Length: 106
Image (tube, rainbow, N blue to C red; front, side):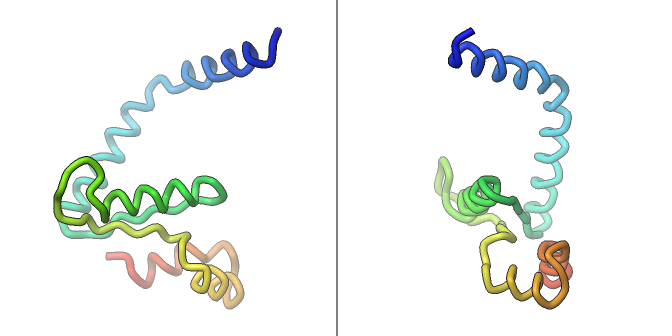
């Protein structure tokens, strides 16, 4: 089997395992929509490449994405290196997200 075919087969397997994800996505969309409607913040976080994804999502909420609109309350919690290193140093790495939510969550 070629490397290309192997990669395609792996992708097909991943996609076939996504059955039922629509319910999860619908719940997430409803929670985000409720937060925005209540003028609450939407928090994103990630590690590694997912950290970049969370920054991108927060930026799209603050920017315009596909149409001009008011900015939406959105924060990526993994962007402030001073905060991340301070909390991990003073408390622990496990607290870098929860400590921020305790401070700025509403």
